[in-house]
Figure (cartoon, rainbow, N blue to C red):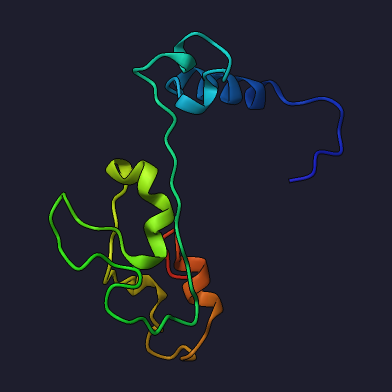
Length: 124
């Protein structure tokens, strides 16, 4: 919406203020340099994701551990992550059905899986 008038209607202002008051305190609203942001109770959360749109032909043990226990040995391609190994969670064989073509849609699209990759939503 493009506002061409300089005056904003009173109802629009009241609606906006009401919405702002109704919002909970979100983590993103806490300034990064406050004491709360630096406590041990609020550690930095990080997410690293590897996305290969055309797939990977892997040999056993290249990307995924050969065992499913907590004391797994890191695979060859992930050995550089050894210093942070206790913080890793390796997920495999996931399926994102939102990336699949629906009836009547073109198959083989690379843009749909890329759009559904982290959102989980079907792109049209």
